[in-house]
Image 1 (cartoon, one colour):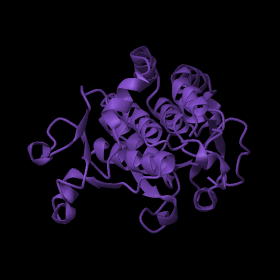
Image 2: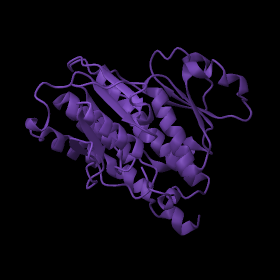
Image 3: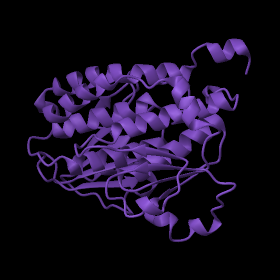
Image 4: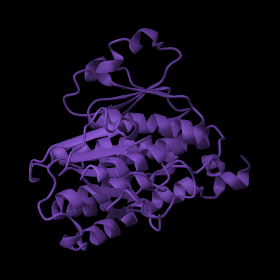
Length: 310
């Protein structure tokens, strides 16, 4: 990467700096949706699905809803789009919510179509101006279509939209509060990131932040990082761990049972007990992936030329 490229703002950085704007506009739009757009009786169960970052977004959405004690205690299930109908069996009265940023993920669109035929209320969560799929009974719009393939604001935007839809004003206010945190200092992130990590660990929400971080390190910096739940790591993968060769980043939540045993080069803390307490850790992970790419001299916007099928 040339000096001129390193001094200009990348597409990924622009998206990262923009995402907080949508934490305000998305809840405002969601709360303004007329009630008649949705079934009067409400969901029997909520089923969230997606693949890749969309699946990780679905998992983090589920944890948020489960930890919101003010919400009506409706069961929330998550599965990969390819496992819909096998891992989770839909039935009439379920709300099936498919995360697909560009509205082109075939397995997610097929799952929505199947759910619609079975009498479920289906919601497609996609970027602005994306075409509503035939199997979706409602299109929930999030952020503009990202110009580079490593989805960043698309991830937080989709979670923001769905959590606001299902939990209402309380989480809308929490998303607004998160906007006050501001963006991290990129130079500081570059110092923390170094040459990146090849093992990422976490438990509960931390696991899915770690998996999203590993994917972003691969997409932005070309690093083949591996991600595990903290407990999973100590039941097999740790036997291949080398303190000399491996670098661990750990997403640390309170009461992580393996906290004292993990020798992490960098710990990303999750503080507080609110449903969205994990959001700053996800944002930090996104910035660390960008910082790693810049430290390695890799253009994080490379995937903009990839097949935008998702």
